[in-house]
Image (cartoon, rainbow, N blue to C red; front, side, top):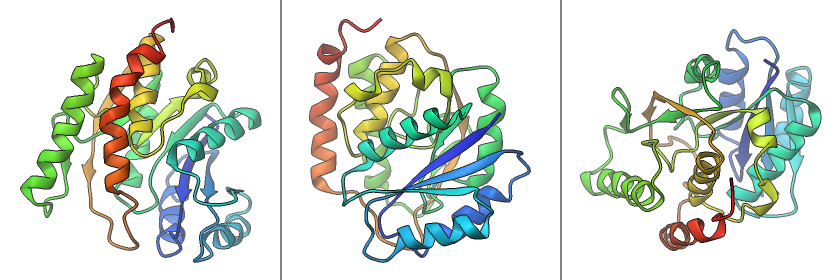
Length: 239
C-alpha cells in the first residue's frame, strides 16, 4: 500500500534525521514521511526540507505558523495524505519512543483490520524499564480511566503509534475532532469504535526519549482527564 507516516515536530532537530533514516530504510515499497512542523525555533522545518531532497522526495513537510498542538497537526496531516491518495496513514513520534521497525508489524496487522495500534498494554508490550513506578502507574491508570469511561475494547487508548487505512480516516468526521495533547488519541479511538471500525494491537516497547525535550505538561494531563467525560455526549448521534 502507498503509505505515509506522519511525524509532528516541535524542536526535534536532533531526532528527525535519525528517525527519518530508520523509517525510510525499512524494506517497504512506497513508504514516505510527512513532517508537520510547528515553526520550530531550532530549524526542524528547514531540516525536514533538506531531508526531502536527500531522500528524493520521500520526506514531505507541512509548515505551520506556530505551536498549534498535536491534534490539529495530525488532522491537517491526515487531510493532506488523503488528498494525495495515500492508502495507509501512520502516526508516530520523532523521538524513538515508538520503535520504527514495528511499522512492519502494523502493516501486517492492517491487512486484517481498520486501524493497527502499537500497544504498551497487550502481552509482550511494556514501558521504559527505567521509568519510576509512579510514572508507570499514571500511564496505566490514564489508559484504564479513559477505556472504562468510554467502554473501549482496545488496551492502549492513549498511545500515539498507529496505522490507519485511508478509507477509515476518510469515513471519520475529522473536522469535528477538537482535542489536543494525548487525549486526541483517545478521541480518535472512540470515534473509530463508535463507527464500528476494527482495531488490532501489536506489542511494543515504549522507550523514553533520549534527545530533546518532552512536550507533556500538566495542562495537557488536565485536558485529557476532563475531556474524556465530554466525548460520549459529543458523539452520541454518531453511527
